[in-house]
Length: 92
Length: 172
Image 1 (cartoon, each protein chain N blue to C red):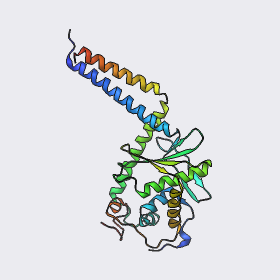
Image 2 (cartoon, each protein chain N blue to C red; image 1 turned 60 degrees about the horizontal axis):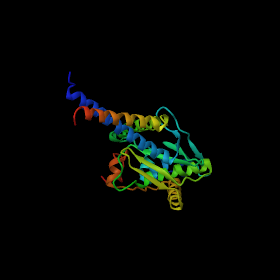
Image 3 (cartoon, rainbow over the protein chains, first blue to last red; image 1 turned 180 degrees about the vertical axis):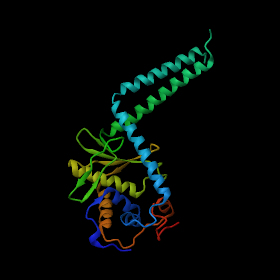
């Protein structure tokens, strides 16, 4: 398994560097995919990873959009008051 | 008319849940703001900036960039898996270091660290220091060399590798 030096792009992506650190053979296979292709499990895991990433990014954006802590303080206080009132009236 | 107990229980539960959500969000928000203000995020319908360094012939798009008050960019890499029990593997650390290099090249300010965040809340600051630079440049230099069949087979790595079925160096 040898690579023609002329085929190697001088530029690397961060993904390339990370993949090389993971395993040089995996790095080489991505650039020269075998006929069998990637495993089904890895394709499924990759799709699931995208969903988890999107969910995380939406949460990050939401937290950033509701930039004011006041919103959460109001919600938390209201919840606490509600819980205390319910507990008192229920005789707990 | 007496109000049934289940209504009180529901109100109590709603109050406790609201309180818990607010506390969690405030804590996450404080943690994120403590690193810096959100500058960009690569997802949720938005595309973050592709950072490029002509000097190092390297490009990449961090998951998230946070900016401190003095204009330093802190790259954040999000991993959809759980926190590795023995800490972040070298490939994750190298990835964050590569983004730190790109952040430094773009802004002229070296971030003190890059952040690795796992889906279950695990978080690691990977220092962008002399040791980090040495490790990153070593991997980049090796990746640019002609491939001579090197591999790093291990049961754990091979189990997650997409090319396992075709690989003749696999450990499993």
